[in-house]
Length: 357
Image 1 (cartoon, one colour):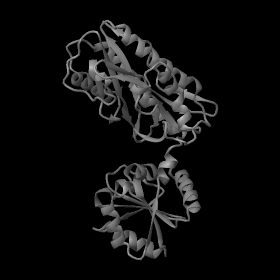
Image 2 (spheres, rainbow, N blue to C red; image 1 turned 120 degrees about the vertical axis):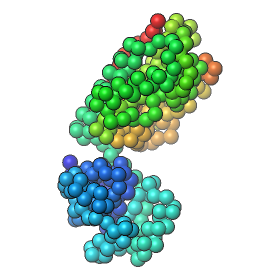
Image 3 (cartoon, helix red, strand yellow; image 1 turned 30 degrees about the vertical axis):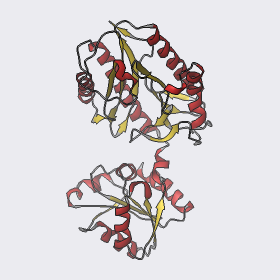
Image 4 (cartoon, rainbow, N blue to C red; image 1 turned 180 degrees about the vertical axis):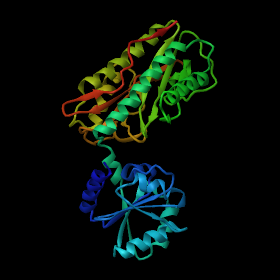
C-alpha cells in the first residue's frame, strides 16, 4: 500500500520538478509511511524514502514504515535533513506550505541554508482524496458504527436528560464498540439550540415538543465517519414537519443525482436550489458537503465556491440544513462514495421523520 502511494507521490513530484519533499503534516506522514507515532518527518526523493524520528520510536517505526529507511534524527531534526540532502546532492526541497507556520519556515531557511525551499500546495492531500478499497471498507465500518450509535441513542432519549449526558452515552457506545475516539466533538443540540449548525452538546435539559439534532462520527482505524440525524422529542408542530420535509427533499435530490463529472458547485446546487425555492435559502449558510477520510474535513467540497470535479473513489458527506433562530433547525447527513456511475451510500440510518414520545 505504502509502495503504491510512494509511486503516485513521485509522479506528482516529477511533474512539479521536485527533487525531494519533506512531509511534516501528521496525517500525511501516517498516510504515506504507515507510522503512527506522534513525531517524525518523511523525506522522499525520486529513489529514496526516509522516515526520521526520535529514540522513542526506533523499534516501532521500522515495524510500521516498512518501505522507508528509518533514521534517528539529531536533537535538531533539520540538521539530519540537511545531512541527508547533502549526501544525495539535492538542492531543491519541497515543503508542505499549508502545514508550516511562518516561524517554522524561518527556522527551515536558517537550518537548511543553501537548499532552495519550494512551497507545495496540498500534494499529499490530493492523493488522499482518492480512497482505495481498503480505505473505503474502513470508512464503511466507521459508518456502520455511527448507524448503530444512532439506533442506540434514540432508544434511550427522553426529556430530562441533558445534551451532555446524551453525548456521553453516544461516545461511550462508540468507544465500547471499537472506536478509538470520535471524529469531532459530538453535537447534540435541542430546541432552539438545534438552529446552531455546530451547537456542541451543552448542559441544556431536553424538553418535550422540540427538535434534537445529532451530528457525530466514529474515529475507527484512523478514519472518520460523519452522520447527522434530527428527531422530534414529543409532538411536532406544523413548522417542525415543514422544514424537515424540505431538508429531506433536498438531501434525497442530491443522493439521487450526484455523480462523477459534476463540480462541487453543481452538487451543492442540487440541495440549495430546493431549499431556496421553498423560501429558506437565507437559512442554509454552509456547504452541502465535504470530503472525509483520515480527517473529518478534507477535499473535495460540495459548496458554492468549489469548481473541483468529483471523481470515483472520493468520499463526501451530503448534509443540507435549515436553521431558524429562536425555533430550531434540521440537518440530515449521509456519507457517500463516488462510483463510476453515481454514488454508494455508506450510512443507512432511517431518515423518516421520527417522533420520540
